[in-house]
Amino acid sequence: MARRWPSLGRVERNSTEAVGTTALTSLAVTGPTALNGGSVATTADQTYTGAVTLGADMTLTGVGVTLSSTVQSPTIAHSLTVNDSDTTILAGRSARRQSAFHGGDGCGGHTALNGGAITTTGTQTYSGPVTLGADATLAGAG
Image (cartoon, rainbow, N blue to C red; front, side, top):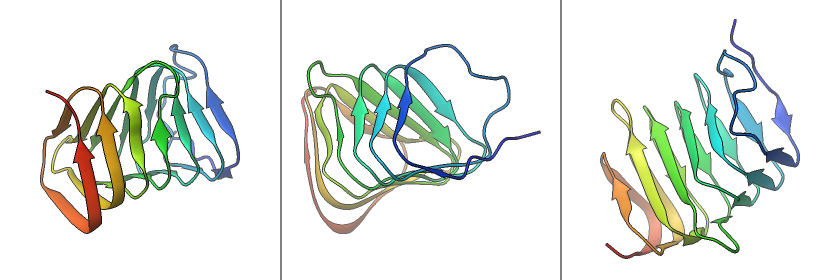
C-alpha cells in the first residue's frame, strides 16, 4: 500500500538508506527542505515550495516534480537528478552552486522553466522537451 504524506513544514532527509520499501504516493513540503543524500521517490507528485538545500547528491523520482523556490548547495557543489515521467517545474532561482542538474528523465517527462536562473558549476541535461513559461537564465559548464 502506498503512503501519502500531507503537506509538511520543515523537512530534513539525512539518510542514504531507504526508510521503507514502498514509495510514497505524493509529497508536499511547504517549508525549508534539507536533502542530504539518497533519493526521494513517489508514485505521484512531489512539490517543494520552500527553499531546498542539497547536502549531498540527490535524486527525485515522481510523476510531476515541482521546485518553486531556491535550490542550492551552499558549500560544496552537489548534483540534482529529477526522474519525472510527467512535468518537472522549476519556478525559482535554482541550482546555485550546484555541480550538475539532470532533468526531465523518465518516460514522457519534460521540463517547464517558469522563470529564475539555473546556474551550475557542471553540466545541465534536459532529456525531454523544455518549455519556457517566463524568462529564464541558464548558465553551466560542460
